[in-house]
Length: 531
Ligand code: BES
Ligand code: MN
Ligand code: ZN
Image (cartoon, rainbow, N blue to C red):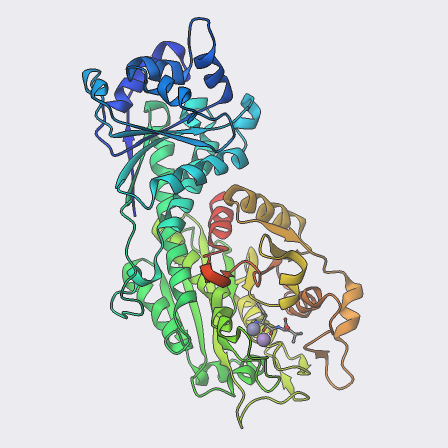
């Protein structure tokens, strides 16, 4: 999928005087489809008996009655997110129209403030994009609706990034992106492969910057999805390390991958206890993006990289166990976000850290009841070997103290309980830092990759008491996601920290089974907003 910008110097359909000239310029551009937004008021104006004004009426005059015709046959709806497709007719050529189609997308009965809401916008973007795919349309010019409504620059950026995010998401095909592997010979790319953002002189700079950011974000999401969807016999800890290292050849990222010996030398007894049941060696990946000043405190992202979670000796039931290949989606989202960050050449220091291994049962596997020593010095009684994510993360969270981070965000498919609590809509957010909570919540709204805050109160720590070690690795069934987060919090006292539980949002089950690329959009938006 390709994204580009095209500046139509005077295009400004906000100004009634310029409306006709703007539309003529847009229509004269030879594309497969021009996408325009309209509101209920535009339809009322078209249907009314008075002198007709507004986008639809003006368009109708240029196109020789095509819009009126669509209205007469009942194709023009005033419902938000409905679309109406007009195909080129003979009469269009006389007016100098070169686009083959016009797709009208309805913002609904909106006043100016509502039209500014990203939510209304996201709905029309989704339905318009759906309409563009799956047919013979290859490219489309997109002129909705910021420029039309004279939105502030910041909103233009959010809208453009969101549109690219949706279009990239829609275009993703696992089989097409992994041709060498030939997992699925018949996957075909969608014909729709080029989205052109039309803007005017007033917004040209913001538009170009936002398109570059959106493209980087999609690259990061695609990578996160690929890594998530790859089968666990291929996407091993070694593979993840190589994938990260590969990025250092394409970008300015500096990548270091440590093996078992180095992990032992660091004293990561908790991490190693999870890895010890597997024949495939653990890896500890550190990716650095130096976009800010030397010495400037970095933002650190930590991702859970269990490439397959059988549960270990506390073996999981067989049903849908294949989905535990997705237990490295936290890691994939961190690697994807680091890639996007590097592509954007973000002017900040960002470090991505990934502890990765497999959780397998074997003669050498950790037993329930084993006590291990974490890098922090705290001992952990492992009461359930299936609560392994926190065991690899706690050592990574201790490791990152050395960076004197501005903030640390860990991302993990940590608990089934989070899926019960929040379903597949929001990722769980845990943090005691109000500023971090605010920033992540805002970034979630801007990317519609949303989070919902859950508690971290001291009272829940009671559940993690062990009779034999400093802490137990499980806290029983009540509030399972909260006690998991509380466990992690014991290793994060030296910096500002937030934890994202993405167990319900990182992938989809059922017929549309596949990685979602979340929370790459959230993290990229968060990083972009950090001053
Ligand atoms: N990776 C799982 C969490 C998970 C399960 C995510 C299902 C998405 C869907 C994690 O390692 C795990 O097994 N957690 C246990 C913790 C329990 C033993 C305290 C869980 O959620 O059941
Ligand atoms: Mn587990
Ligand atoms: Zn797990």
